[in-house]
Amino acid sequence: MTPETSRYADFEGLRERAVALRREGLSLRQIRDRLQIYNNDMLHRLVKGEPPPEWTKRPNAKDDLRARARELRLEGRTYDQIQVELGCSKSSISLWVRDLPKPARKRTREEASAIARRGWEATLRIREEERQRTKQAAAQAVGALSDRELFLVGVALYWAEGTKDKSYERRERVTFVNSDPGMIRTFLAWLDLIGVDRARHTYHLMIHESADVAAAEHYWADVTGADPARFGKTSLKRHNPKTARKNVADDYQGCLAVRVRGSADLYRRIEGAWCGIVGAASAAVRGNRT
Figure 1 (cartoon, rainbow, N blue to C red):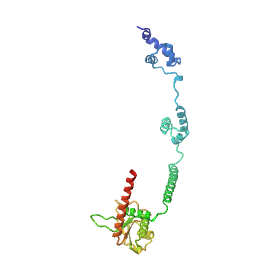
Figure 2: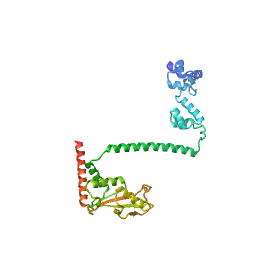
Figure 3: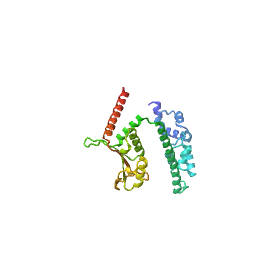
Figure 4: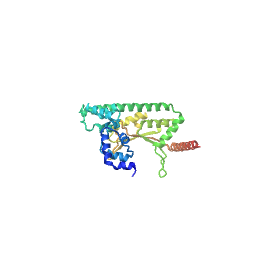
């Protein structure tokens, strides 16, 4: 038996000495050096059940925050207010103060709702101002349109929103339908550019039966600058609660169809121009890849 083994054999004697040293306020390292016990497992067994002295405990960095959070909560602060002051997470605050009573409500629910609503209205106002600034900047960036630019815009506009010829049904006639007055005005400007006499235009309103039909007819007459007599009979869309449209507010004016009489040749020119745009765009893409 080695001297070290014989020393460990008197475990109870070592434990009594180790416990006595622990109760005197010594750290594990000090007990180790005093008893010359260099086996960590043995050292921990000797002092098992004895709490470490306070001076050896590592301080918790959040103890001060926790204490302050509890003070603020007792003052009646909300989680948001405590978070702003202390800069810690709400989850930590909740853990620290959950045993404390909730602060008394200082406002009625109606007052709190009114404050929240005013805050939200201010947010919406700021967003709307940003939205309008972006739109205005984009509009100014367009500037004036050349005749060629307006021609290309009109062709693309028609091919997106106008009626098309089908292989199973000949539809070589120009009919443009839209609810956006800006689209209608741009299409009419395009027709003027390519020399289509306005005497060849006809107009046809399609609108939900629950709308103000007479007001809508006058509205589209103002948009087009056409005599109301040039408008055909208005088509009314029957009300179906299951498929009712949502855009039937005060600004709902239905859809306007603009037709051009004797427009088979014009339709073919539009289709040909669109094919030219597609081909040029495809060539531009291929050129960028080289």
